[in-house]
Length: 94
Image (cartoon, rainbow, N blue to C red):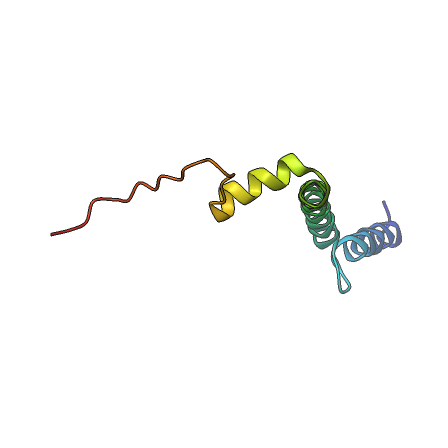
């Protein structure tokens, strides 16, 4: 091979290396950004599921009398007429 051909190959190789590694973002940075984007998309999908379940729970509390009764009993200690409420307290320290 002549010196000109070798010089051309070297220039082409350096241009390829610069195209992949040079500039503001290298190919490795691009791959890391893609992985981060996929992680964030998965986190968004998970949060959307949480929001959907919370919306369903809120609608049930607003509209379903059985759910309203359960929440009133569990959260506020409410009872119906004729029922007795027993509270078990932890033993007190002497």
